Length: 166
Image 1 (cartoon, one colour):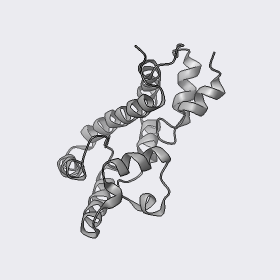
Image 2 (cartoon, rainbow, N blue to C red):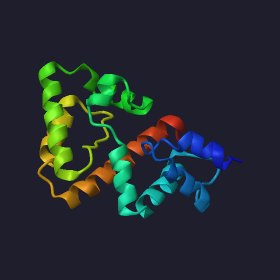
Image 3 (tube, rainbow, N blue to C red):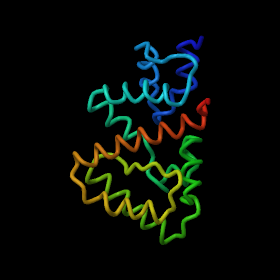
Image 4 (cartoon, one colour):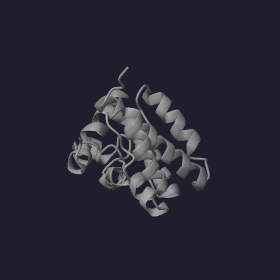
């Protein structure tokens, strides 16, 4: 049987820098053995959705800018680094980097949290396209979209940690 400490240690970072989600999921008793990506994601997502607006905003704000200062300085979590590298965001030209920086600044200024997108399977052009389209959204629409993307990122991270069993 998985202990609370083991569960939080293993899954506390699935929602970026937000172990309280894993703590609450374990404490709620909704996590069942054997652990699968589906069951753990359902338990974590339930707690994320039940969190207060300010707590969910905190989870959004814990995400790094895409191709931002943390990436350049090597300060991303290992998951974020791999995800951004997989989309080619670690190999931007100076012009592309400047474009991302301008979009990051405009987006964060408008919405109060960083642009969040599950980058797995996307190219830098796909990401830029989404960035440019979403910046015109209302704050309410973008908050909901960002939360959905956070859940998708969590699901992808869980699938790499515990692949589904047949």
